[in-house]
Length: 517
Image 1: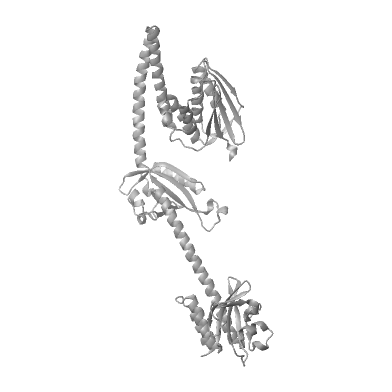
Image 2: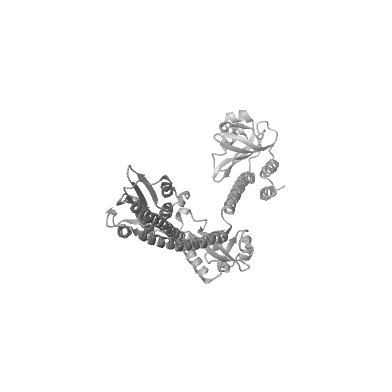
């Protein structure tokens, strides 16, 4: 058979994707020994100065799979040092092969080429015989050995690449499964859109949420799920925010199901970036879509709506009835003397506390869903307004303010409700008459507003309210007001700290400043 035919056979061996790598090497070695008329063929791996035989043909006892030796004792030592193939017709007479190698392996003829994998020397592809060769190796034979080495190296690279792809796919599948489990546990559905606002993905759970199959939504505009123009405008504003690189959230966003029913949802949207751009280099120009995580809020909204109605009705009725009771108590206190008048005064005080309780409940409801987006706010005008109002309400109370002209905090004007609650509480429950000190300090990271009174101190239950937001003390009207204070401050990224002395209570409000960013 001509040399071209042997080369074609080698090409076919390594080109066949159905042949395993080990089989390809064995077939190539067998074909090579036949073409070169040599009795031994072997494929090696060279690492850290050691040659290991990976595959071999022939019956040489030292050239079998698994055998190894120091590289300086191997015929292949010189093979990996030169650019071309190493072809030796008589190793006993060649200076290229060391005496140690000849004594160890006792090979006469040898031809080998180095195997390159990913730009590095991997090993060698070699053929040999125990007897010297009479005729020199010709170019066709040299090229053949080079071809086996080169295609063998490429096969190893391909096998490594396929193995990496398999491992990468396994990792991706594992990550997808983890991601799916987290999403399923935390959200009802997941949507993805392109930058034009058309569905590119919908999780299977969308059918339970909106009645559409994922296939029905792919390619459709997001407005297909919007019940009205107001919802579309709200969604458009959120989409613009996300496409600028900022996450966005929507609470109680109505979506229309396939059957026309309205489903209220809580939604969080994040940008999806081009995966080929490193995270550190991403900009809004690299955003290729939007991902939405959706939770069905219909039941919660109905429940909160029912609670809100009950709260308003109950509060309205309590206020009306307490106003009547307080009015009659005022009349009785004026018309009666002594112990009877004192009893009427106690009734009036109890009615007043209940009316205050309804006011606190109303404020909690009004502040419940206000956006948490903070902004630079000077709290000094708020403090001045609070002091003026409390001095008007309680003419015998002494209030001292130590503060700079400005105190800019990263907060919202509703912080005034919390500050007023604390000052008003100190005025009501401080000494007789109460003496209150308000100190405001500004640093780079925070604004601290300290309110100190000379009263008997906070009961433990009310201290728990203001420091931890515990709900159990809400049976007290005072506890509810303090819980309102805790709620507002903590939703504004602030913190409350209570310090008690032998006489009086000090409460510190910590608010962040714009400079913390």
